[in-house]
Length: 552
Ligand code: HEM
Image (cartoon, rainbow, N blue to C red):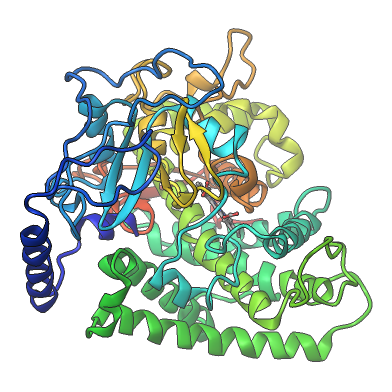
């Protein structure tokens, strides 16, 4: 989404209009004075056409957080990129680099915390983990808001979901309800494990059906992860080629692609009055999505009984009436959890849970093709601790530390959300001792945090051992935050971790991945849509002894 904000080309008519607006503003303000940020905190009014960028630090490595300051906010401005009226800093954000790399590069010039204007929106960019922990954890509640955006409003019926809804008592209740429902299927029960293992069986059979030929594993992996979410959300599971599953995958892809391209309307909401192909496509996909989910919702309402909920839709419906595990919180507003909230939550499980999990798996497989010695070591660990006679289960997790390290290293080196979903300051607050005014947008650049050479030795090297301590035990450094942290931490984290563990361990227990003859290793640069994806690549698989059919 952010990449689109920074790189999408506006249609010529819009450019022309923007040009006129810029000329008018420039003309009217040309003699204006240099505006200064008052203590760096928020949008500056009455500014000169091109604003100074604040103190520019010399080029060099990513800079440290600077001296720790006292409790009072400092008056020193946060270094800010130049800006033009209306366009803000957009002209300085081109160059074809995706935002996470562009921001990382800008730290060489502006330091780890800098500001820019996305059109009219004053935005802080956080690039080191100390500042990120302030935003997400220490002052997490101050920064738990989300900006109001055209595309996400469309997608979520005006914020009736978790991810894009602003912080409020109702949101907290809603989020707790979803969290409790996931817990119901995940921790402490074998339900989720059964769901995932059934998808794993199907995936392994499909992958092994290619024989020794090379193939692109992405479609099969996406299908398997989608199947898990379908079972979890509305208790349907599908065989390969099922029409309803294809429909789900196709509208989900459409939403992901158009959200990634949506772009400028989120900076300039007035642009939605102009014809916009991406927005029309988004609306079409949303219509298909809503038709399918509404049908599932109505079926669930008709079948709702008194027993334990069998899936997320049932858990939400029960929570809606206060009869579920989530308790209606104090001040949860009269409106409560409506059918719209239930639908948008179900939709979000697909939007947030499919692309992220399947892409993480694809990144890890891509790195394993580059590092066959890592694959062999995982398989040795599996052989010693699980063997080949039975499927891997969640209870094996404690015995497979190296596998966990491989998963962590995959999420460190290629975080699927290299820049977190934008946060906004809900109240006046501070970052790194700098005052931050209410309403300021904050972008946390996880890429730069996960590649900071002060905390990660040779950060561009795929080295799972960095997640083991001297005694060979798992160690998770505080600057490793693939799911975010604090009040806005990923609500599906434990679910995602369980899926990643079961998928990867089962795949590597049952088959070995290698490069097809004559193929070059996967390109590891990636491309940014809604998530950071590997470019398509091919792999060949061979069954491990006892797993020739893919499942037992
Ligand atoms: C490998 C898989 C996943 C990764 C790496 C991941 C990562 C993230 C990240 C970085 C955030 C943003 C945190 C922030 O804004 O500060 C997030 C938010 C979220 N994720 Fe995930 N996620 C994954 C899987 C899932 C799954 C499986 C689900 C649900 C089925 C899910 C649901 C959500 C939701 C609802 C939010 C919004 C939370 C909020 O705004 O309060 N995610 N995720």
